[in-house]
Length: 251
Ligand SMILES: [Mg+2]
Image 1 (cartoon, rainbow, N blue to C red):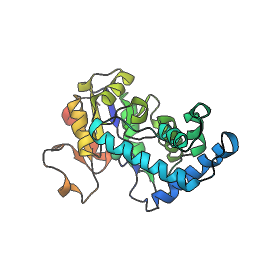
Image 2 (image 1 turned 60 degrees about the vertical axis):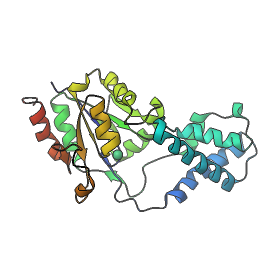
Image 3 (image 1 turned 30 degrees about the horizontal axis):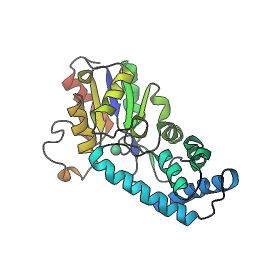
Image 4 (image 1 turned 90 degrees about the vertical axis):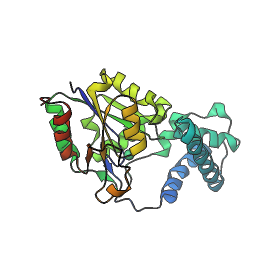
């Protein structure tokens, strides 16, 4: 019996196709906030360039290591470790405070896919639980600020999980199990919808969930034939007929 549908966040619920900004420049503004805060409130630290360079190196190293370990990088940890590397005493630093002043929010050019509210309304109406599993390196409370400004947060009252909080990235089974526990459902009672063939589809299937691939029109030729062969969608409108096939009578 179908009890829950879990979703990836980026490029599944939030459309990043309209983002054409300069990521490094945008990130530098956030790091500027952090360096200002540390200088004024914590410890003399003036060199934004040094902080930004150290931060980028540590972030890249964390993601490189994560490719094999699947241990999730954590933005708060990297912000603290960067400051410590530049001589700020660790006992004076609080990751939560640095994340607050970092001030992540919705990225200009991104938006909620317009098919999200309708699909979620259909699931809510049939009392199907919903949740989010994202491979973000930001703790979930920060992504929730962004979700709220996109109008997505209200649709996910129960279960929102970021890899940064769990410590493991999809496709590691631990993060899928955390979401199943959170919603109190078994793997075969849950469907996962995501855009990444490896992290989302192979990961969800290995954890025992049904998996649906959301892809952009025109990208199908790049997808391995074995990935979600009979469960590929370009719009969440197409999700319900797949659920009908897997769980006859669910609605
Ligand atoms: Mg994604």
